[in-house]
Amino acid sequence: MTFSVLAFDPEQGLLGMAQASSPMAVGARCLHLRPGVGVVASQGNTDPALGPRLLGLLGQGVAPEAALAALEGTPMLQSRQLGVVDAGGRVAAFTGNGPEPEKGHLLGAGFVVLGNHLASARVLPAMREAFLDSRGQAFEARLLAAVVAGRDAGGDRSGCRSAAIRVAGRNPQPRTDLRVDWVPGGGTTDAVDALAALVGRWIPLIPYYQRRPMEPSIGDWEAWSPAP
Image (cartoon, rainbow, N blue to C red; front, side):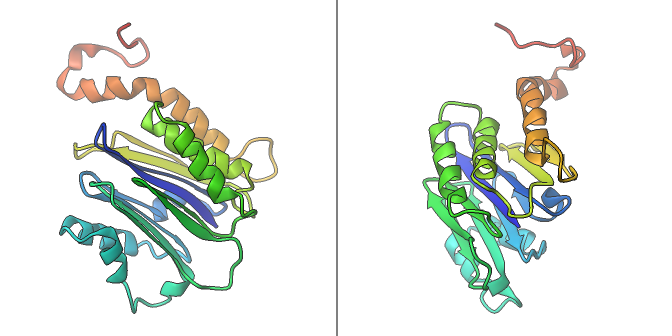
């Protein structure tokens, strides 16, 4: 019931992921990121414990493909879907062979798109195309563009009631960590729209919050604006 994009930006050393789903609080269960190590999507019949497990393997230097292979024999693995990108830009993904239609994953150079319970076979190609076509934009904007494109191509068959995005560089704290845990269905906007509004407000403030810990005199965030 979830579609996601995971990526590594080699120019800035950023890892990130964005996703949307019909159940509540997808970002609390399915999105796993460790700065300087990697990012993991654990979705489908979600087992949140697989995210930290895979990140632990990546932290030991295990390649994404080998990390996924290490899960062989895990209970109910064929009902799950996993995506992995490490801090070197290596990628891997797994989609179990359960009976659900319209699911899968696509691998690219430093990124993965994957989804299940999709409304259309167009969802994943649209996400890949949007991510590639958004080169030159802020990393968060590129991740968001992929999720918006997936939603617009049909997204989750049951709708998009929660969404999340997280990005981290080499610092321990995330650079971006935004979640929309619930937007009821049937309205004119969904969780992807709500996330897009948050990301739009957040991106201009990223430099502010990166400087503020070591530069308290920077002032109040509402009065701050980047130098021309």
